[in-house]
Length: 444
Ligand code: DOR
Image 1: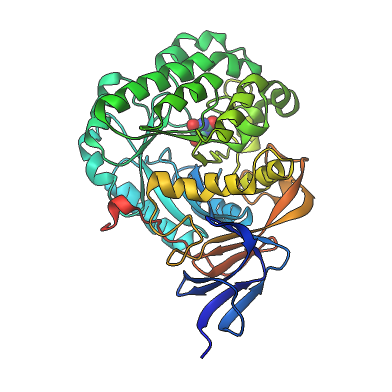
Image 2: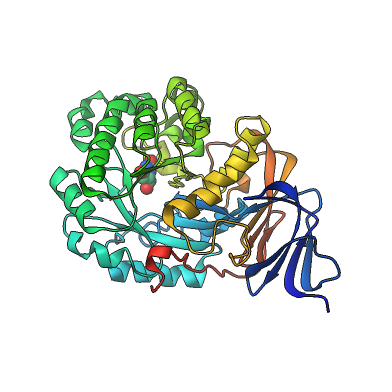
């Protein structure tokens, strides 16, 4: 008798651990049940994806969705709608909300909100403070926890742990890989005078490569001392990338599409304050080394650092203008355009957006198109040529730094645990997000 599936994804070109080739995928109970040629199957639903590529679900391991506390910028519902419209199946969200996600109650509150209103799957980082260090070993194991996030340099919000003693105490107590915003606070404070009123180009001068390098050197030294794994978020400088190559035992590395795509000179000229983010955009000489790090395998994952602020907040005169730009919806099209331009292969893309997060964060049953894994797929049309417009952006902030850019390669569908969540720019059905599970916290 023919095998029964709830869903068959049929006729597409699958990109997974085996390479790139034609394959159908049978899904049962939200899990991948068979990969290969599936004919005459009894399937509840069949999706014909002839001419399209089926990728493992894209995981964006750094977003700021602002709920609770700043819902005028974004909510968990709107941010996750933006995610699935952009082909993203799961996000790791950051703790600089209000209240901060620094204790079990705040985390449980976000998980409950995620369950009731998010369209993609999710995990939430727990922020480290000087006060919650002894609780971190319990917090990092709770349901829905992506791990611990530490701001070594201050950015949006007031999370900051900038003294070596506290950083050392954090690394001593935690066991999972923790994520770091690595800029040296003392240097940022000492050089505040470099900022010129109304001139966002001075943002890149102020938060200079040295500020990033000093903090990253310190963090790597402490990681070795404690034998702990550290995840360096949004690496922006060539110096750090070269240094990180010598520390792959302890360090994993994130790159953002904006640092790979926009250079400081051009971006400030065309976007003004919209280009302001932390760590800042850099010049082409740094960007070249980031791409080198991507090709050499030093970079492990891509994160969008989706950091929505309203146009009014961005338009305040620098330095009152807010740092950060949205990105969860544009990660896939921007990077597929780089694939089409020959800057990276499709295999490397899925390594950065699915296999990489699965490997370094120990995600249970996500990040691979393999039997037994969640049926999360990002279905893309590599040939679609389309211009990114502000009107397409579902984020409350309603703008993108990539507006007006014509790209080749577009997400056509988002399938999460066997459920079609987005198809051809339309969100289908209700929210249905679930917490991502991690190998180091399976009992959570
Ligand atoms: O530019 C940034 N904005 N960098 C960060 O680290 C935080 C983010 C935000 O939350 O706005």
